[in-house]
Amino acid sequence: MERVDVVVAGCGVVGLACAWQLARRGLKVAAVDRGRFGQGTSATSFAWANASTKTAFEPYHRLNAAGLAAYHALAAEHGAAAIGLHGRGSLQWAPAENDLLAGQLQDTYETLRGWNYPVEWLDRVAIAARWPALLLVEDMVGVFCGTERWVDVPRLLVWLAADFRRLGGTLFENRPIVAVRRDGGRIAAIETAAGEIETGRLLIAAGIDTPKLAALATGDAALAEEFPLQVSPGFLVETTPVAAAKPLDVLLWAADEDGLHLQPSPRGGLLLGAGDIDDWVGEGDHPAVIEKATAALVERARGWLPALETTGLHASGKVGRRPMPADGYSILGPLAEAPGVWVAVTHSGVTLALEIGRLLAEEIETGNMPAALAPFRPDRFAL
Ligand SMILES: Cc1cc2nc3c(=O)[nH]c(=O)nc-3n(C[C@H](O)[C@H](O)[C@H](O)COP(=O)(O)OP(=O)(O)OC[C@H]3O[C@@H](n4cnc5c(N)ncnc54)[C@H](O)[C@@H]3O)c2cc1C
Image 1 (cartoon, protein in one colour):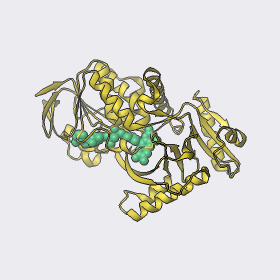
Image 2: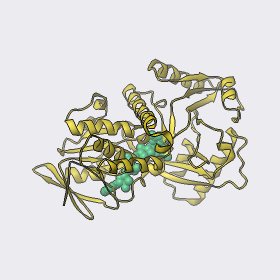
Image 3: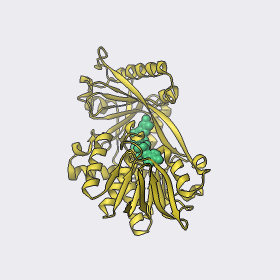
Image 4: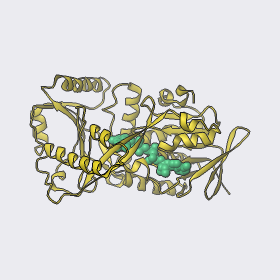
């Protein structure tokens, strides 16, 4: 039987980043997944590393900004390509004559500027000069964030897994956690389909399955249903490589209700999504709906990129399931009912992973909560 300092349950972007940060601190760590690593929600993410859409609550903005900064720091050390970091900024845009949308963008710009986040206000002339391939049917204005990036999550996870192993961590794939053994209330071991791993500390980072594991860890079966997490489906389409994607170095996001978003994919195609189409597709149970949604996204992309050649273009769509905490903000920290057990579950997990991994690793090793985690504790939900 193995014995480790910490078991991390779940090897998506959040779990692997946490495991890696724990191993960097010299702890003996086992990262355990029921399947292959990175095959959960992290396999279907738009993966925009950003803090610019988080303007409602400053601590959450700051956490996301720190997440983005952590990518830049890692890229400076190992190279952006090695860790799968792409692009040269994001542009949220709207027609200037739409007072509501342009006004909201202006508010976003003012808020971000007030928080010293690097942001630029661009008018039609500036947008046309920077990205001549874009079709500006209307007088557009936009908020440009030059430090924001998008992440090739599979590439990042391969890098994290390799470095985790180099640091002495053990990655157990295809080992579902089926039970948690406690001793006098405190966690003693986790039981997987292929045997036990002894540990005094468990970090649950199982995405949408976090409630089930929290129920196992606490012995409170009702938590599987009552944990404050919703599942929010999202639909993404990726096209085959296309010439129109090549010169595009920016991630685009429409500030309207439909929220069309587009970025060059790491494989040379385009990655596309839209808020209203997420709603049509739902859990993706109807192939005809998927087909219609895919075609609609490609057509809308052509509205922005007229050079997009659709003849012979293949596009395939898949549904991802976002782990969405009830109030929209990350749930990060210990579970009161189960000494030795922490959770890390969040939307925007790609943006946040490296930073929340760093903060939780510090807390798990030292026993002291970093101040940045205070607004995001499980106990705000009485957990
Ligand atoms: C369409 C879409 C667009 C998104 N866009 C963005 C974006 O632009 N920017 C951004 O930052 N975020 C975005 N997100 C959110 C982001 O992708 C998620 O927050 C993130 O991937 C969650 O990662 P995770 O590691 O928590 O979960 P997952 O990737 O789901 O990993 C959880 C792991 O736990 C494992 N597991 C479950 N149960 C068990 C068990 N019993 N035993 C062992 N292992 C278990 C699973 O196999 C899985 O590998 C988007 C999500 C979607 C769906």
